Image (cartoon, rainbow, N blue to C red; front, top):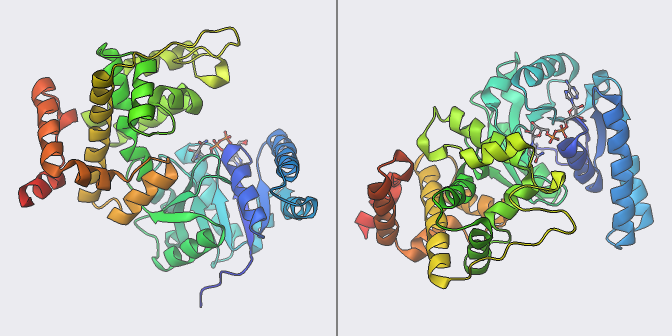
Length: 386
Ligand SMILES: NC(=O)c1ccc[n+]([C@@H]2O[C@H](COP(=O)([O-])OP(=O)(O)OC[C@H]3O[C@@H](n4cnc5c(N)ncnc54)[C@H](O)[C@@H]3O)[C@@H](O)[C@H]2O)c1
């Protein structure tokens, strides 16, 4: 019998993700313990959580009693031994395989055998983290998005060794917390960080080729494409260091598949410390007196930009389906709920027509003669089926 009743959960790491995950679980009524090996980080997280709850009360999203109750369910602990009777432990420490493996090895001796051990890794192999354990069957990936309390999507990633019985339980927990779970194969970037690469990568190619500037590309994607943010605004928001690292990690993990090749432009920005909003400068200047660059609102150019980027996204989505990274339904959910795309990419491809997508991909391939523009076999098959 699966137990989806309230439980005691543990979170390791009290940074951006750990504190967000703890907050969402506490707000859903769970008792949460947080451990961080840096006491200063714990203090910062505690203060941040208090401030967030206060703001939620001010905005009348929560009553003062509810906020207090949620806060009282989050307990900061200074020793991992406190996790002995947790039913779920989610690790959200630095993205470093050795650090994560050491932690999982320790957790195995502390947590009872019916406790699920989850990692929030974005780019490491869940299988390699599970391999650090003697009982890897109860290890899996639970990939939350930032900010965790707000973003609905969670990618559930079984390791090669995971007992599938856990998947049902995890999906029930996540649904109870108001999340949308999707299941992804343990491959680089899982669903979202793999399929979304061209949103940035192709925009950067268009910029580097001199076809359009940042403001024009952002305008095309928001005004014509219906995306909430243009690629350059979004990269500045995420941080050019973070976005570059994800791209580079996915590129390396795919054995240097040219489809995921990072752009020098982004690397240089990261090197210069032009990280985006957080440093006041990225692709755009965020200083108070800076003037905002204006897009060239040429409809033909805009259409060309939007079509090329969305085509590459469609190709990536069909390729992920071809390689069984996730079900069609989960791919659509991931991109619409996880990164708020205006439409599911598989549907977009169907609407544009498979013939058109194949022809447009082949045109790009012919022009550049780069493997980056190879058409997914699935798109080609669908076009042939008519
Ligand atoms: N930030 C994001 O947008 C995002 C999104 C999804 C997933 N992730 C993943 O979540 C994880 C955490 O990312 P973050 O952005 O919250 O990082 P962060 O740097 O904000 O926080 C990491 C925390 O882990 C603590 N820590 C480091 N080593 C530890 C150890 N051995 N034991 C206990 N605590 C330790 C640090 O003191 C720090 O407080 C990473 O694996 C990251 O890839 C991040």
